Image (tube, rainbow, N blue to C red; front, side):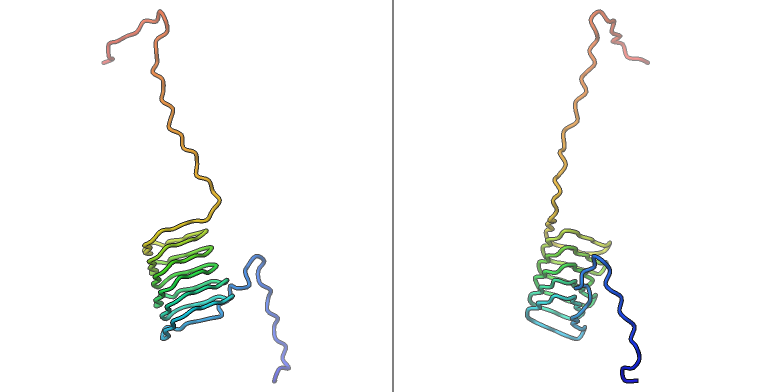
Amino acid sequence: MFGRERSKPTPPPAPGAPAASKIETVIGPNCYIKGTIQSDGGIRIDGIFEGTINTAGNLIIGESAKVIANITAHNVSISGAVKGDISGNRVEILETGRVWGDLTVNSLLLNEGAYLRGQTTMHADIEPPMIEPPRAAAPETPAAGEIVDLEPET
């Protein structure tokens, strides 16, 4: 009682998993906030937000959320409505997600039913393939002295 019980140690985070993946900030469904959010941790929005969001962590925009903001985050998952430009490593727009704005991403996932109106720029160091026109097949020319049948086969 009162701290004499030994608490179980928390397991260490998985290798390669960012420490900022935990949700530290929640804007509830009955909340309206206007301003700037600056965070190193994860953020979940289920209410209404207007302004700017900058986070080194992940951003989850719930189905009931309405966001009017320019967003910079590590990973962004959108189930609600967003109006504004989004910049991040990975952006996922789920079935109920709606986005009006430009995306700057490394990875983009659009689920069936998702809505996106804007331009997408992917920052990948992939060169486009060299596309060459097909080589035209040279018409077969008869060899010297060869007999050529000009009548079509029936």
